[in-house]
Image (cartoon, rainbow, N blue to C red; front, side, top):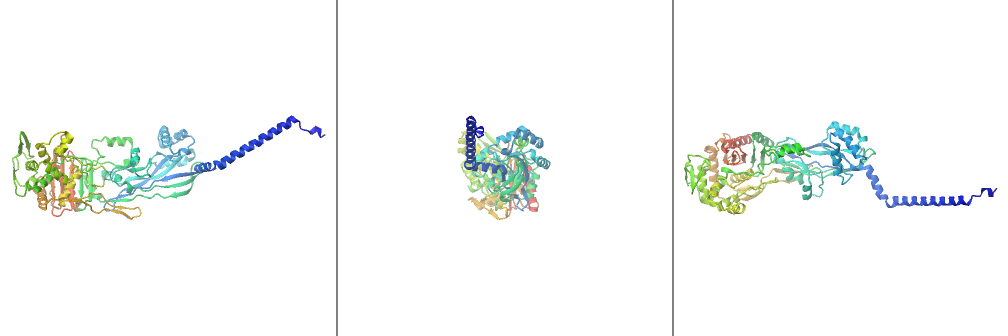
Length: 585
């Protein structure tokens, strides 16, 4: 019986080999298990956590902007963004087709956006901005079919009064590659929203808050189950402006349909009460990513609505520059209160004839009369006797050819011509005829409305140049004072009181009995100067600079109308209306 149950040697040998194979297999499994758990355990644990925990960035709301009376001009509103997390998508092509039907965006465009931003597969890629409520509901209802799609709520800039003070406030937009490379802020990254122009750009470091973030647990369908960690975003600081909303609005209505600017400021502090530019634009269009159609419309508009004419553009100042010529002539002893010059209507220099705007001439004029009547002949002679070197000295004193100090980016310095400038730029010598053209604000001289405004403020204060500014205070989100902007005296120019007295008398006479009579008011005493700058490319530019009250100036005004015609006819009445409105306020 025992012999009958004996295992044949061949089978026994096979069983032994099978046992060896099983032992080797178990050893292999044990080694592999040890490798996975001990050697690579940390890696797989991290991947497992990432599969169930989602890290999200929470954008900080930018600081709000208020007018001088605390009226809100710029705030933030909730903006729902449709994003895709590439690492959570099983089939991008299938997902793009499903999502395309909901948000009305071509599936190819969705795929391009996701693939373009695949540097970090766990970072949400923005697909659709400012999602309306009905699409939000549809996405939530189809969550199981849209794995990897999330809805993010971020603050979006909101300019409450749309076009009001747009060139002054500026706008925000998504940071580009060049801006990212230039920035010293290491926390900035692609897709961030930053200030692009105006106050939004100048005060970016104050307005920009500090990002927050959270880690949320999600289920297999990508739905949030619980919030594990959260760091609240820190809102940016608020700006309290010097601008008066109602005065700004009044000025913009006054300029409606025109091209130009109006500047109003307190000459004793440098506070700008209104900075008006027309035509304007709606900065809400830029609040995230402006559409191609809107950008083409704005950027190709021949009226340049995106340009801050008061600050960025330069023009010939025309007869408003006679203020500077007069200052120089009086201070250098070339003119005084008693010297009179006869104006016949023409002035001859060798074979050239220079005319006065009044063909029949003004007759015999003193300095005050010449300034009030804006007599060209009087100032031609002043320019000739001064010469370019002395003229340049006074242009430099008045800040021409330099950037005016103001809390706005991209301020133009204009052109302050001189003999050296002409030789360097045009390779030509300076001629006596150039003195004549310069004396009445023509020729090579180019100034911005802001530069002429700075000059009239210095006349009103008799030589004090205060820093012009648009922000009065910076306040934290908790209401704490971060920075207070007190008046800053930049410099005092050494010009005698007698000179200022005569110039101011001439400016008052301009309104009472001269070329600026349309700016005369029964309510307030205004002093000022009109100007008409010749424009070879179209109708003349109209100017008015002035201050009120004449006896004790508390406000200065500059009105500039591009292709507006005559300064006395077009700009002076606007100045009167604006000043009367201000004093009624």
